[in-house]
Length: 364
Image 1 (tube, rainbow, N blue to C red):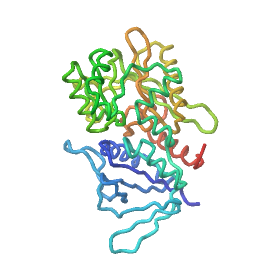
Image 2: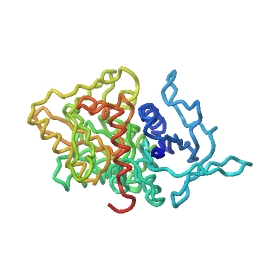
Image 3: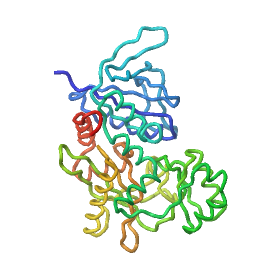
């Protein structure tokens, strides 16, 4: 019998392009080639789909972030999902065959936000991870917080700044945000990897922070700062009808002198540490895991997610956000949480592929 064909898709048209490549490099190394046939596919920053070049670079080298090498053959996915087609200018298109499951190791808008999931749904192709709705809601922090609050989960105070409000009613926006009290965290509503996030301590820095966030997204979130330790938990869908499982909780600490867990702290060496299990009371850890699964279910997530909390000095848990396709290098937080919980990185990759293969295309 032929082996299942897994297309690992990475890159994309957003500021998390390089983060996607770093995760895809780890996934491609971990997939068992005796069990699966693998097709690496890059989406360039201009939106072109290409077969990954043989010398595609996936890691940060000399401080330079990786990008999709567009020298590989261009690709097209027919809308019926029947077969990938490779074509080069001046040559006859070549069918590469059908794909059994797509593993989209992608982050940010036009990728993790339900867009590629919608494309695959329309083509009838199985894929790893959450569906269109969960991906879209998880990407938009404003809608995500609305859904989480409706599920009875505690979230912090925030103000949503839409493009029209900022352009026409800036003073009103600033006054409303200041009612939350300084310091404030300002972030793009639909971005990840701490891109465009700033901490504001006064009116001038607040305006600058909103403008910086708007470079990434015209919709911005201003959040009240929450004093507390950052505790994270990963959730993994179980086979069949079994409930989702939560990892051991882990505490993230910034070690590089940054004021918060920013891009450099997340992706550059020796900038953060992760303690698993987190040094919190046992009953708090158990409650945190239950809350992480509730958040996963509230959004109708599938596959894997990472849920981030603050643990306050008063002993309260506040849910910060859920990430439906968390950073996925072997050293990223979610894989490390699972490794500490008894699921190695190769096992995690295999479980996600198997979950993708088992899902039915269309409404579920």
